[in-house]
Image (cartoon, rainbow, N blue to C red; front, top):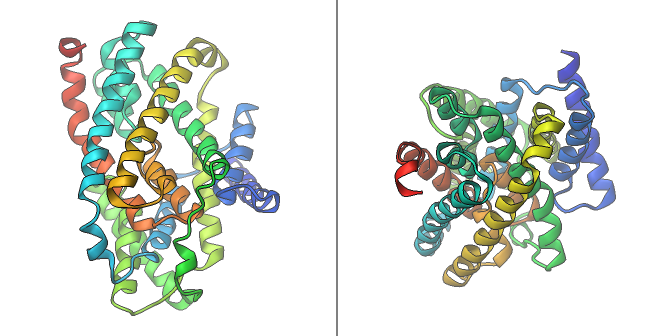
Length: 339
């Protein structure tokens, strides 16, 4: 319990410090930085699954607040970007795997699992079932998630890609009398979905529950800021705590390979995002957050915090995670044939 309370306290403190410092995506970035630093210093921290899932459901409900009655019309503009996303996922995995195998001597199966974008839990489950190098895969996956979470918001701010989605909507806030029951329903539905193997179940359940209420006009406005702050803080803590599972020996051994693969995957995602932005007539920053190979919950939270269209970002990341789940076992099974 002490580890959980300390992780929550550091996450909330980091979120508030990030807001005070004017960081981009301040609550998410601040929490990730502070909890990550504590984890690297080997402070014992933990975020239990129940609290993590509640935070993901909260992020989902916040995403659902941005689903407008024009959502169906918006979907008609996205097929090109969704197709580009599918091509980007395959390209990033193939190129990154080849780099790890040919350039750094990694085993083909381990390299495929290490480069699966945003599917850490699934990749680790496959690694265990196939008796692969679990620690190396976790290091590659964690370093990529941390690097993207920490660097993408400042880069987008530097290139001048602010999100304007929320500025065009009502300033109303969903009352707690509606927000809390919605969150409870989302958490329960997400828990049921997760037990049945649904990817990103709590995020999706929150988005659907809140989105249905907004589309039908039952409620209007953003999810309560305090709930959003807590959701961002815990999500950042989830990312930060993962650093405590990496040893310094692993960092020294895999730092060069990780940096190369991260740079490659981020560059490729930016190129595909640029093409998608032009095809769908959307801001490049919004497309890049949607294409970035980070964790689905963290990237959805980032898009929300940066003011990009939450439905666009979440839809693309959910498609990516489904695609990875479908193709990853096939790529692993045949890794030695195509590399």
